[in-house]
View 1 (tube, helix red, strand yellow):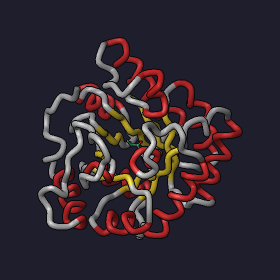
View 2 (view 1 turned 120 degrees about the vertical axis):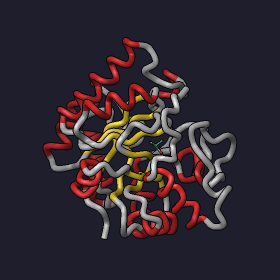
View 3 (view 1 turned 60 degrees about the vertical axis):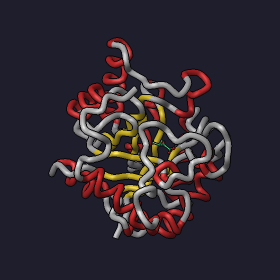
Length: 263
Ligand code: KIV
């Protein structure tokens, strides 16, 4: 049976570290679930790792629905989050329509949106409609043309904005938050201030859980994988055991290395 949001929250309260991996099709979704990964993210990173684009910006709502459908056909174990792609939340109406498609057609359990203050009305509207929302702060791949692929929140002022945004997202109804590429001390602080699960990527070990991109942990990323990721297949004899090593290393606190300050 697939994990529920309340199970994920209870695990966090009990001190378990939550594991999440991206998946884009049924077969990998199945094996990720079998390995004991708690959550699957159908990330718009598929624009880069599956479609071969240099950014996530070209991913469409149709693409996200198509991949979410495939993932949910194979996934019988994990909570499934689907990304709302670039500009699909540019107006309230568009955002509601996108989320409805991801849930109704794709079968997603939760939708993820990038941004802070800008998305608060959307988060609040979705939450009131009973749609679980995951926020995404820090490095925002959909804003890469403006801000680049850089660690965010390094100085006091930007760190304060990130903390304020995280609290505002939670107050608006977000049930989870992804923090991408922020200094580990800041990620830890935000995690402690929030009551919702905070899932880190490239943000150190002080968050409630970790997410990585599937292709990076299997060493099949075309070009360079991010420095903070790890090829778990390099030390395993099968994809299945690489997925299990990821789960074991995250749950035991071996990955990411404790006290590793990012950037
Ligand atoms: O699209 C994606 O895979 C993501 C992760 C990098 C968190 O948003």
